Image 1 (tube, helix red, strand yellow):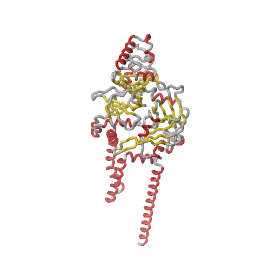
Image 2: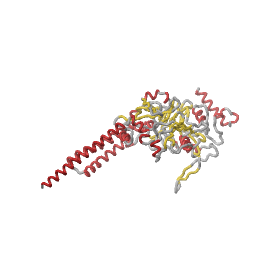
Image 3: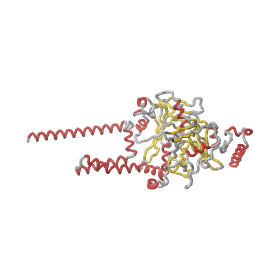
Image 4: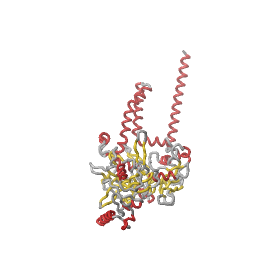
Length: 525
């Protein structure tokens, strides 16, 4: 009996020591995590964890509260661990699933209530883009001089496509860890060498890993921010700096808003501007400090104006940013030069429909400015971009050697024929007779699209396709009313700025079209 008593005492002492050892281990682990969160909040996965809790506290708090409550209940009822986890899963799964389903709608309705939407007429453009996203991307890829580096995400900044010249993505892990950005690709269609590489190392890489990443740099400053684009702008002294719009969340709905603008120099020094300071900074005069992601979210938020119940159950009024096969690579919002400065233009349509219902317009260098909404009457919609591309291909007076790319589904696989395609269509509101008409301007190129062959213009309402033009300058002249274009017809001559002067070479029909355009311009004056 004495032996049994000694054995029990020794066992109890061992279990007590083991329990103390467990508490010590848990305490050291907690201390380690606390120090990590304080000194290296930007290092993955701590940065991801901190932001995850901040951006969705309800999604994290509910499981923890339920686990704590069930833990107390399970202790009193003396539940086994298997029964505890089973009960937690049965109760938690449906609650957590419901919250995950409604979290995004709750955020979007909150964003709608925070945003000022103003009904407005279309704001005309002053110029379009000289080249498409696909053309710049193909040229960046095809004129890359170094196997270690590749173009990053493309952005349209100050009239040029710009992309990071940084380490490859994918499984090229070592380069992503040791090489920061080496500079920037710049596409200049007017230059002798259209692809330029500006050599200027940065303190991070867009595709970098751990301490070499943008996420680490940004979240070391503030672990509770998010970002979606890194833009490269001139610093006014012959160099470039990285500009990042930093978003935070507010309220239980976690509504996103622009909290700061980061200007990061090559030496690692950074300026953290308030939105008001960024709006007044001359270096950011035509730069999109209102990020593209937020402009798209404001468009989707407009679809929740009838409330959560209508949006979730009947889907009344729901809209989505227009997506299409034509603009698959470069989807809306589009950063374009309007009569009121640089603006985001975001075509939208009914949820999961191909039609066009309206366009959102928002100044890109203003934070929390009004969103102007041009929307068709209730029972009216225009054809979507893909259908307009079909109208373009069916027009009668493109160059005779154009062989349009067509895709059909055979029994075995996809069948492709032709080599020329419409690769991008951008909204192009134009002032006509005192009113603004909506057109779309597009780029036609041979696949792969390393060069735009000609430009196409189609009226969104009438679906009339205008004469092809062969330079971006002619497209801009037409937008400003300096060049008249007629609807396409058989046997028609190509349009051009010089056609207004070569009257002797113009057909009778073209002269009449030109005369009509001149008379209309005189009436407006």
